[in-house]
Image (cartoon, rainbow, N blue to C red; front, top):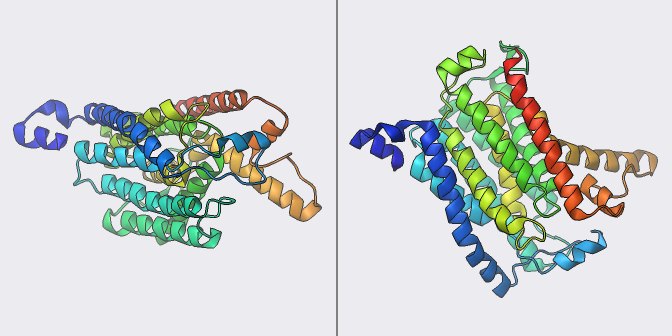
Length: 353
């Protein structure tokens, strides 16, 4: 709608991506701040609260009455704000909205199943959820490849030219990136605000990278690839704004949790951003917290199966620090610091080519 003002009323201000990204940010922020208290009251009335696993640290038992599924509020706010501000003829923007919609539906099904059963986090079966994630990621990848006609070259950090054209095999990489990142953010969402702030930071970093990738002059100056993906930075900005609104109620002690409807969607969208900005490998640094959390689970499971010994007191790793009696706020803030530093390094690396 706002881009329509630029096109038909000749208001040049609304033609700038940076201006519309700022508008989308504040629209999503305001929508979330207004709707979330209403959602929390509804969730409390209907007992749509977070079920806690028996194996969780004892301090988590007090969170059993906390409303969950807050992701449907900030994802919905993001989609509405984006529809009002993006150029909807841009195929990559449509792909971003498709990613948000598909994975929020998967997360909602999982959250609703957990709330309905309300025991031991028994949501969708693991195989069913993974099948839905892979199917959705494949649909998004097919859209990019055959509808948006997206470039299939593979880029590495610090190298200005692509190393290989993957062709249709890029679909395998893209599906892996989206599904892996989706599950990585989901694993991280275990403490109040732990996944929220690193997600905001990662979205901010990708907003900058995608804006550069979509800008012919800046991308040429930095020797980065150039594709018409700039509009997607508006959606990333909207999601960052919505998450800040969510953080207002999610910071410790949390009044609401995002649930799988939020965490699975954020992760999938971060994976999508990495793909269209040709930053699949840089994602490992941008999403360092999510990588650390996922590796801790892999190490724990692998060690126990091979050696019958545990590497950590409990996995994911934030539970390990809880078992060592670290205060929850200390764990959260230190993880935030790591996220900030790793994203600064990622942005610094853009000039090294």
